[in-house]
Length: 185
Image 1 (cartoon, rainbow, N blue to C red):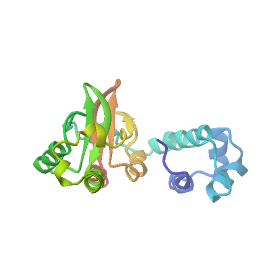
Image 2 (cartoon, rainbow, N blue to C red):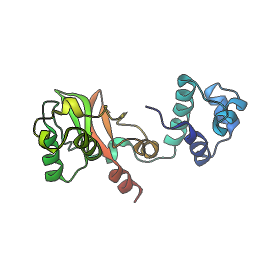
Image 3 (cartoon, one colour):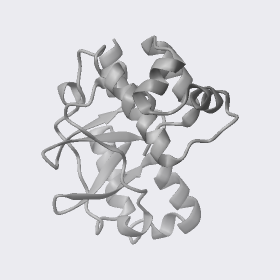
Image 4 (cartoon, one colour):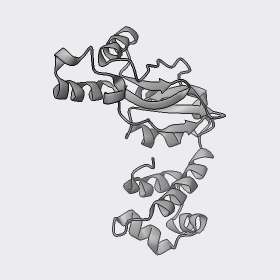
């Protein structure tokens, strides 16, 4: 999942590089970068990916923290066979607002307070104990590598409830919006 295209200019300016330098790094013309940033042109997925990868590399040089250095290693997990009632109970017990759903060691989705409220409107409170997470969970949240520069995560957390952190293909941590605020403080 890539950040929003309209964030390219903001990230580029924050890093302090020119459109020309970004164009050179990505193999895209300067005029194309200008058109993308101004909203006059929409890049292909591959072009957008190249641009964001270049920006991530540059941003990483300015960040002393990585995703692994401040993620919470104590991940609360549920299974697809758990119910919405189980999720609500677990959220209340642990004071959290989202829980990744795992099948064995593979993340298969996520449940959040917002998602539960949407599903309650659809199914009604009486079906709460019977509604399986496999039928109501949201898609898998973004997964980033342990070494991903922390400042790259801030735009990403704006568009998802949480970010999972992996090391050698294993999920080892979770980052929420409140974690990113702690990092900034």
